[in-house]
Image 1 (cartoon, rainbow, N blue to C red):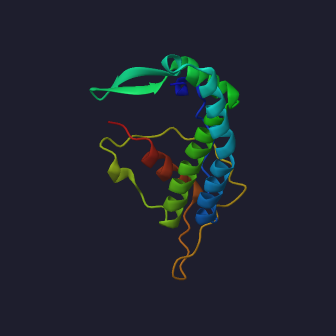
Image 2 (cartoon, rainbow, N blue to C red):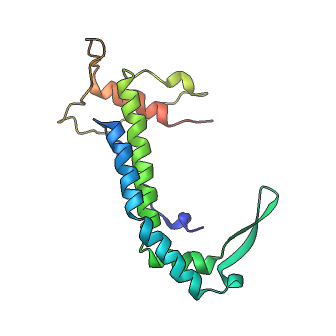
Length: 160
């Protein structure tokens, strides 16, 4: 309901040295917020009458009970933007996982996935830190970082 006002520009994807630990860190961070999320919902529920806490809207042809706009806004205020922060972390983490998977897969050219391949304008990239590309079966797959970046960017910007 409030996501139209959220800022989802989270920066560039980064290579994850230990993706499994990143996933578990995300679980831990989310779990650490559990008590405040549940406690604040309980406090607000005591302040709102049921007819003010919920409203109804149609979703996929089905009338569904959802939190009212007033309740949602009060909850978001009480959480001090925690929902937006968690969503931003999720967006960044998913981008990092996709980027890491692409690097670990030897940076394949993904242009064949595009219906209408496009030329992406060249961007300036800080190449002072080389990409940490792991070796697979004793062979390092290292290309020119600029061509790897261009392939990755082209693959991510799909045009119908």
